[in-house]
Length: 141
Image 1 (cartoon, rainbow, N blue to C red):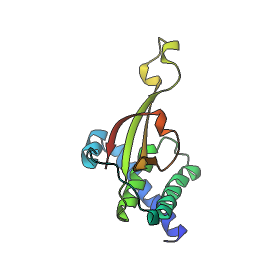
Image 2 (image 1 turned 180 degrees about the vertical axis):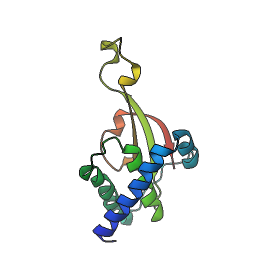
Image 3 (image 1 turned 90 degrees about the vertical axis):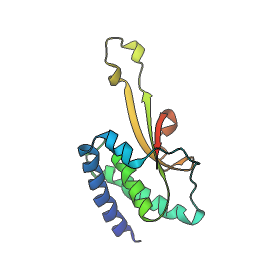
Image 4 (image 1 turned 60 degrees about the horizontal axis):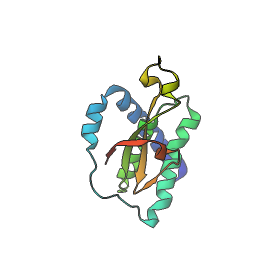
């Protein structure tokens, strides 16, 4: 698939995922995706280039827009695009404490909590943006 067609597909899917993310409660999204409890999925070597192209197309959307807090929409878009090509992947949800919550006892707890969503195939995240700093709360396939 050429780069322009892949970019157009990524933008269209991202817009749908972003609207879905903003309009549908997370509880419903989680129920649709289903909890993953099985073995880790692995990609085949011949799929690696296709996976990299899809991830690059979706992650480049952030570079051209003002949207910054969109990791869930990115993850849903990548998962959907990979599923269309019969490549299995999982969406991981994690949380971490940022800064020092103890240093600011009067601040709200949620001021120091950061949630994140990312896509992994097997034990390898598609984007190395520090998912290992997060405590995994859920894995959906």
